Length: 263
Length: 69
Image 1 (spheres, rainbow over the protein chains, first blue to last red):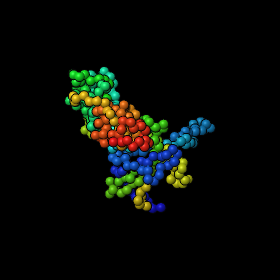
Image 2: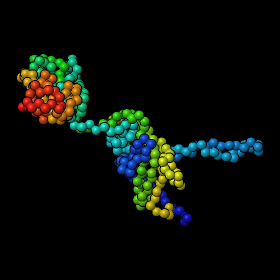
Image 3: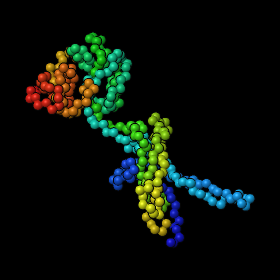
Image 4: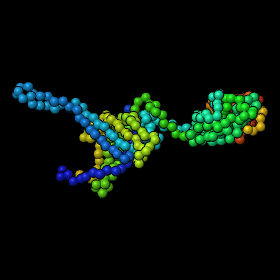
């Protein structure tokens, strides 16, 4: 084998993830882009213990015995979409179809100034009616709707005739996507692919596969921001051995590949 | 406030899935007149969520009742 070439690394690139299904590795079409990932690093560790001899009187170490191998992957995900959130919130993406509701009863005792959160968001065509024997429609001047948030603020109530409570709301709601929080019974297991662009070597490709990671839960996400940078998702995962891999020189954790044979 | 109206005199057969008074209903289900305040019944029809049917229509999705208006 020839001498290795001198190669530096200054990386950018794209990161993709694919979920394991139980103990089954991801299918080849299960990959999802994580989009903008502003930092990515891998740290490996080998635990060991040593044995010191006792016959020389110097207690010299004579063995270093491996006691396990492990790794951690850390990333900073700037792209905050439902897929990325689901990974870090140990949940899945739930699609909520467009729909409509009628006669959703509000609590009794509504007074002017009350703020009401409806069951859905993305509200349109809202009407408010009362519960009188001959029901009436409350004029829209008596309330204010923050439609996107499904938030109804009662500004006033009609004076005469006084509406009979409970008031009822009917409305259309938009399609939405939701992600639960810690909804899954166990953390997500994923495979990770880094399609690296090595700026130190004219953008040469660097391909890193990590075959099995157990994703940690979201440690922090800033929801109200004051810094001059966008919010991000800190990602941390434990590297696990993929024992479905065949025995071979590449081991069980992953591989790094370069598109040349002299590096 | 709008003028007072009378209670619905017709039932509504749903044309699409809908939730009424907390109950999830599929397309084809009928909300009976007695469960409908008139403003809400009119809203359902105006929104294209359902269509007017006879108040006598049975409140089941598979109803073959032909008394629709």
